[in-house]
Image 1: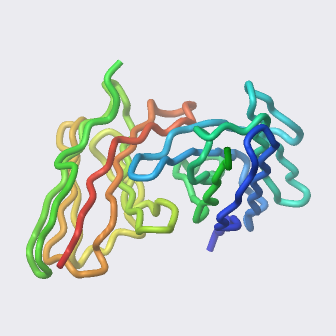
Image 2 (image 1 turned 90 degrees about the vertical axis):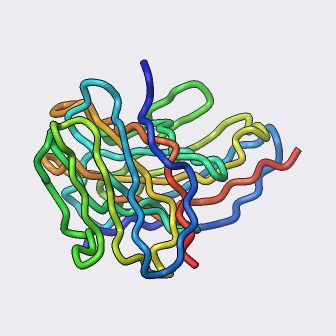
Length: 111
Length: 114
């Protein structure tokens, strides 16, 4: 059974600080990883995808992947109150076009 | 470009009743997914369609849930009879097809079974 583990939080971070969200996965065959943001009562929206070891940056967001440790993270720099949401980590495998989601981490940015 | 459309947005039914949800994916998207998201959990895949064929329905409770995607466009998910534990948000997502990784989600249907 493939699993994606996330700390459910809540994680509270002061405005302007760096928020760090972590995710581990059980299947070494997983190759694609996604971070979705979900506001309360809304549907998930894709923030970042990452396929290769290392860092991928997009604006204030940086995704990090370490396949040897089976670990994915999302860093949010200069956190804003609008970043308060649940962040979902998801993975899929080559040839298997379905996503397995973690339970999500609830992030609160404190003004 | 219009996003994934779903209806209804909210539904309240009593247990043992039946309910149906509708999804219209992004135009041209070959792959369509139905997810169930229980409060406090991540979305769980129920069924995946490629055009009008089922790719994966291994987690669909087939004794009560059914889904179809006629003509490879719109899709309907049905629950009959509903149980209390079916209370959840039902999310539809679509993806362009082979080689495209991103899934785009609709607004969801929030179901409450009393």
